[in-house]
Length: 235
Image (cartoon, rainbow, N blue to C red):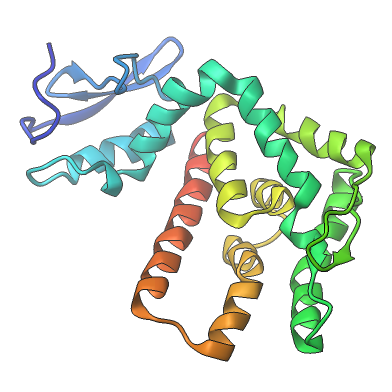
């Protein structure tokens, strides 16, 4: 039986191939998920990312500092058992996608939104066949059902591990289109993060930003970047 995972007990961390993927071992003990399932990683790059997190542990295991391990656990324990529900929830973001709701004023903010968001909506229309409707204000607009279906269908192409990353990319940005664009390499990941923050950056410019808000934004940005790294390590 593997010893307690709260404190470091191991000296060696290794990656071992399996018939269905790769496992990470601590002094020969196979890592398991919080629900005691086998933590089988789909690719060697992802397994090495997870192994590096365990190698970096000094004394105490801190899950908040192990984003690849956390997402791998979530893929197996949470996403896999309810994949259909996860896909449905994420597809619903298309109905109220961030990129579709524009400011009526001030004009400068509306222009910033258009510069950041129009190219992404054009990409979705061109590459996914999903043209979403843009509106001003916050009153919901009914989107084309065929466009929403195409966006939802795109989610079905991802593996369970990839979908775990896509979940974070969409929920952190508030945009199904941004999440899909990140996975398709439609724009640089930093550009996509900045696109998700247009409204917030406008408010900062107007009113300033306190330390607490700055720290929260920084953590959210890092989570977004980590999700992107997890996605590509899972391919």
